[in-house]
View 1 (tube, rainbow, N blue to C red):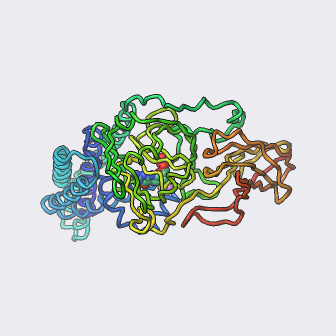
View 2: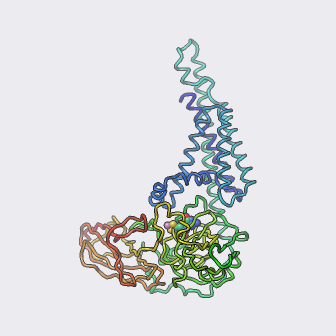
Amino acid sequence: MGGRRLAALAGVVAVAAALAVGELLAGLVDGVPSLVTSVGAVLVPFVPPALESWAIQTFGTSDKAVLNAGTVVLTLAVGAVAGVRGPRGGARIIGVLGAVGLMAALASPLRAPAATLLAIGAVVAVGVLTLRRLLRRLPATPATEASDAPAAGGDERAEQANDASRRSFLTAAVGALAAAGVVAVAGRALTRRRAGDIAAAARDLPQPSRALPPVQPAQAFSDVEGLTPILVPNDRFYRIDTALSVPRIDVDTWSLRITGMVEEEVELTYDDLLGMRLVERDVTLSCVSNEVGGDLVGNARWLGVPLVDVLELAGVQDGASQLVGRSVDGWTAGFPTEVAFDGRESLVAVGMNGEPLPRQHGYPARLVVPGLYGYVSATKWLTEIELTTLEAFDAYWVPRGWSKLGPVKMSSRIDVPRSGASVPAGATRFAGVAWDPAVGVQAVELRIDDGEWVPCETTEPLADTAWVQWKVDVDLAAGDHIAEVRMTNAAGDLQVQEYAPPRPDGATGWHSVRVRVRDA
Ligand SMILES: Nc1nc2c(c(=O)[nH]1)N[C@H]1C(S)=C(S)[C@@H](COP(=O)(O)O)O[C@H]1N2
Ligand SMILES: [Mo]
């Protein structure tokens, strides 16, 4: 390794150490955001919309991990340059990185500015000091120059000394890098743990005035391994949002405002909301990005205040044709106001499956609108409901090429067997879920290799707005087979067979799996 390369390595290690300390402080100090995620958040608007949609579809929630990794790589590359510039020039570059981090951190919601400023000071100091110490250990004569020069007699000893000092430098650099890794991982773990603490510290929710009975035996199949549960547990519920770090909201200062085309603007505290009429509803939420057979869909028991009750407090003006939900992080979703009043009972939800909303799913409050995709309706970390017109405002995903209106398309999915599974010949059990949260499910059918459609047994629906589970046993002979599922909704409409991709308004097509049947 030549001298320049060693210096670049010193810079990379110094910046890695600085980033690691930043992660640790974010994990330890309330209100100090992760610099990596803050910078990532600032970069998001510069990510082309097509790439953003692709990333969500390809990586799901891990699109954030990809963005974070990109941010780290970019920052370390700048670190390499800093190393080559030497202690002074390098320190200046690290200072600039710190300034960029500071601006990004202050742009992220819910940070504590003073603590963040101090934390970034520490981060920059660690970077500069690490760089200085490492550069001081650099071999005095860069190896490449030594070997390029004609061997002036007696330089062998100098070369040996050079080798030794290079080894000592590399040991120090690798040691510092390893330490940075450990510190970064610890910081991330602390951040995650504190995220859990907040949810746990949330207040107990009051009892609903209309509670649902526990799930009855006829409402769920308990004998099918691998079948998605009828109520998906909170820690298994799919998650989709643009938030790089989950907003941490203090319910003592949070409020929900009803604004825009209303008779009178209203502001509700968390306690105000919990003091209103609370109801429970089983509703299937799904993402417009869900592919045929995909898992960006889930069914939960939501607890919340009927949206109409909240709207009545403010009084909706005639002509307010759009209801826009705004999140604390600036994200927006909008849908026709008439949906709120058409009897499907949307909720300002505060609870999910018997617990306060988890932070990832919108604590302290979110909207849940049966029959609309999440991107037009299900605003998490809700802080404002604005009444406006459809013409006056396009919410977050609309200018990014997704449809203005987002009714959920009916859909069915095969959960077992998994596609590509190998099963013994004879009776094979197929099972899955089917949903049309606007009207409900009437029938589910399965066919093998373009054969006759076989009716499937379905669970008794929890509600029209919830998915059902289905199952059926089919005899299969040895060989490769394709199984296909389709549903009919409660209005008698058959699920669309023709494939359409998720963009712009939701996928269609019948889900199929390939199974390999062995001789029994
Ligand atoms: N604040 C905020 N709310 C949001 C989103 C978001 O990006 N930000 N994404 C929406 C989308 S696209 C979907 S599909 C649902 C997903 O809700 P979940 O993560 O609780 O499953 O949340 C919706 N609410
Ligand atoms: Mo979504």
